[in-house]
Length: 226
Image (tube, rainbow, N blue to C red):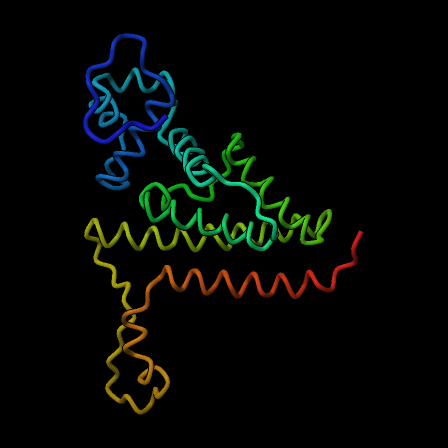
């Protein structure tokens, strides 16, 4: 579906497709960031015209929904449920995080958007399956699915924005570096300052996921079994 690296050759008439447009849009976002994705740029990359792209997508927002669906497809590629429901959730979480690392501009713009597409439905079903196996049913299962998904996707998209800002030159300071006039007034921050400055966000994500899964396991142990 996605276009391989490099510029597209001139398309033969009638060969432009939604899949080709989405793949090209994802590549533009990867290479040049969120502001680069326009109908004019897509037309140029596809050796076509903006009007031809409009025939497949009525707006940039419609393209973003399709890109979000493509991110779901990428995340789920090769996924199979694990014997342990917690390992299934961990795998799904890491897949979303890694997809956002590989495609930060796209993830920053649209990860977490509702697409109502088949790949989003696959992701929803996979998370609900894990919670079902953990012992949750009905409304409680849906609440846990929503809480888990919102947490993972917000972490991944927030980090994606950080990467986009770093790469494309936004003047945003993402490093926790503090030099108070009176360090003694903040003894714990002062003692931890080297670690605060150099913390790796992927390591933070794994730690947060561990904490969340440990809490879910503890709750699951209290649930009645069918």
